[in-house]
Length: 92
Image (cartoon, rainbow, N blue to C red; front, top):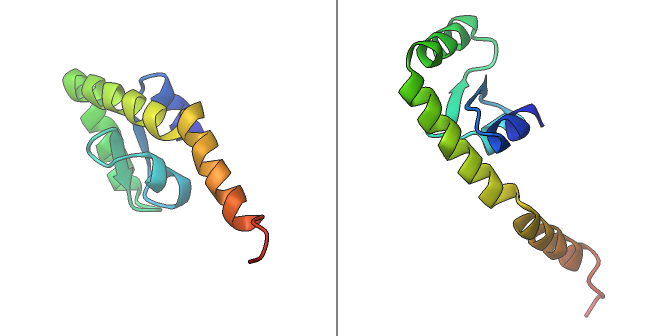
């Protein structure tokens, strides 16, 4: 949820390339994904964003747009509806 909330409000994300973050963050577009446990990569990603305000801002704008499109109420309700229709559909 942290990555989702950060991007929803226009902040780029730095996260590990695993699970939820890998589904939410578009690496190099809305944030930076680093390998799990790679402290040097995490440090490098943070330093890169701290030193480049344009990159930080563009990733923030991209993240806000992407998250609002993918996870906005209209799309989320449609996805949930489809899941329920498949899961709870009466047998033929």
